[in-house]
Image 1 (tube, rainbow, N blue to C red):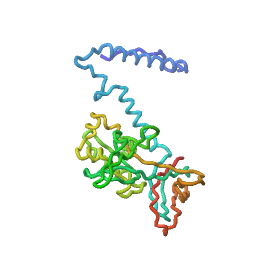
Image 2: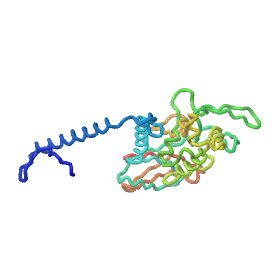
Image 3: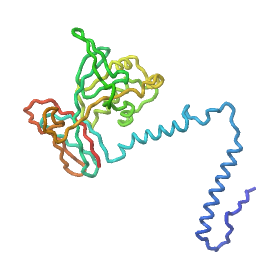
Length: 294
């Protein structure tokens, strides 16, 4: 037998429905829904052994909210008129960049500096000057002992003051490198460099980036994301780079950086960047970080 429904407001066919009637109906609907939800909740008892029913994968609502907000924060740069590009220019070379921002963006150019590190590959260590370096927080200084000569300690992070570094996990999100708890650090590094050096970025030579002894050891042991999280290492992996520039500098060294770089806007969606040095100069390639903002 059908349930008899009592109207919120009784009206006969042909009666005028006023704004006051409509407002009252909305109010009563909300009150009715709230009451039904409350009554339903009160009828539900606590399920035995369900003390974690308010958790998902052992995460509280606050944990899940923080994760959602963090993912949204990481996604924002890709959803706005903002680009970060890494380019490599030979002397005299011009590159055309299709940004599709439908406006002439503000362009800021920084030179990626070289810095001294201890690289490690297959447990073989060597000193190098690089533009990009993956390492662990514990390696603020790395000791290197050459086969012949005196050992030295190479500073990766200063003990005080600001540090040049970006969290590895943030970069994985930014470059959309997917992974699971079973993904190994070695595989993640390979996929990260592939994504990082993909267009519109430029590839760098192998000797312009490397990873640390800690990183090398973890890759050799095939540690997974789950392993790193359990040991508290996942949030302590960083990429170091030192982008910088000088403005209107006319004194003694350090030299102006980046020098002899020209940026032009061809149209609303395309710009060019050129190294104005003579190709005959036989100079090292310019490694640059470009920021585009509308």
